Length: 524
Image (cartoon, rainbow, N blue to C red):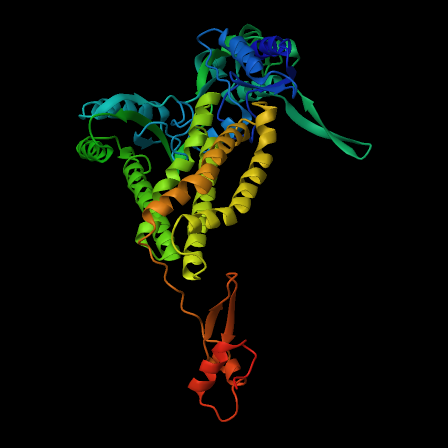
């Protein structure tokens, strides 16, 4: 693997547009990747001025030229992080190897977990469970989870061969561990640092299995004997990680489901497992996180979706105080997303996380523009400035023209640089989002300035605006609106007008005389 990693690194380094290549083999002792030394990761840095798509295509060609027995994948850093938490990538479920359920680590919908202690027995019972699960109607391609393994050097003392030499198993274990792995015998202090002194065999001792077999072991009588004379030295697979759940070791049996609901299949599997016999301290159970939870999550998502749709519609109705206008604005919201869809199709982009974010943002902008525009039409009618008709619609649209256009231009200017830069390294999410935003801003702006006014003129005649009840003013009085010919509303509290009444006049007479003149003028 070290040689293969170095070879691929050199080939990737010769690609135009690749600035640097780095990698690591295996995993650190405290690392989060469950891999062995037969696994490596290469990180490729692409230049900012390079043709991103062409460079990625050449990288994929180099990786694709490897032997078919080598499992490989080319992903961006952002896609890797998204895949690590089980998020949908390109509108599809993560592929095999990524966790469909980040809590259980399973990548198939139906998972039966077999618990036990001995690995060999656990594997045997897992194979039996696989046969049980495969007999259930609706189960497709059941398989036992492959436990990651790594090759290890096993040294097993042959007691019959070691006895004539007076060598015990502990002697073999200590000698082989010292020569192959090393042992700390002390420390050296110097220059305010501490250095451990480790005694271990020369590199040629552990160069191959044959060299280990020829390693000399001291005998109690002062002689030497080769390791292969008293022990069996061989390469054997060993688990790279020991998985445990609730302090018990486990192996998962995974399967797809087709033709039946996941809950029904899981129920049948549980019934068959209840009648199966397992050795003492071994049992199997269907994981709820990957069966009923998925169906519950689907119902929950659909329920939240309907609840959000109803809430949006009711908010529109509360704003306009009209079911007709609420339905008018609500039904036009999907039209605002048409531009974003067309822009994504023209660019050839798939439905990614950035695109979904852009669609949500466009939906919010379209909802705000439509709500403010219709509210402006209603306010003009309520104030009596303009009667319902083409002139009212034209005036309301002109009032909202500058604010709507300003929002569109400002938002477009913010995302335009990401479109100009293109699909470069680091912008795998932002670039599709910017493209969808620009296309959607065009249709949402046209919808707000031209389509909604026409629809309001056609369907808004019967939606009479209702005045909003005023809150009590000072001294418990209410404020009454007064309209001028310029459409400016002035409110004068009732009690304030009482101070302007002529002495000796009744309230009704004084109010009637006050209407003929200016608010601050006394009636004669």
